[in-house]
Length: 239
Image 1: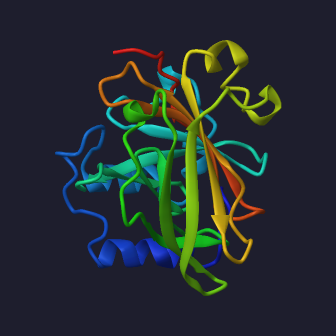
Image 2 (image 1 turned 60 degrees about the vertical axis):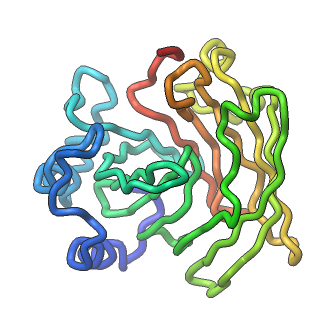
């Protein structure tokens, strides 16, 4: 599991009952009908899903995300659906323990079921597309709400720039240096007035794919809760 609380299962039920989880997912890229996703992430599915990282063992109708939290054993999340948005579709991912990650353009924007969650996050002015950053950096603002510490409308100054790959020691075994060199790397740093901004984030972007896909990232929700995320199975850069 990721960092599960006792409320995680209730959170997931609330998501279903409130309609956050769509009742029909057939039109979402890489998704399948809801009952199939629910059966895949049902209680006890960990042993059936999490132990099988070999691409041949995965159902090709689903999209998967490999996640490592605080150097614990990796887990696989399943894409539930895509929520269309003018700034980029929001991917909604589920773990076998009902934790939820919402990701937009490779960035975590919301979580549920963790010991520390972002209820929501927003960019008053959307960050530039990855393809616009090949030779330039960018500055923008992010606002977000946190629980359980009750920090709301947290405002952070964000600086994004092209960067060398992080030290190999920071990468998971699935992103060796030989593969890391095939991507364009970006670092995102944060500054908050109260000094409580999370550590920097790293993004490995395939600029040669039609949508400039984020293939790997390292992102932190707080100073003590950091994740490594990778599209799984790994995809070779390019069209």
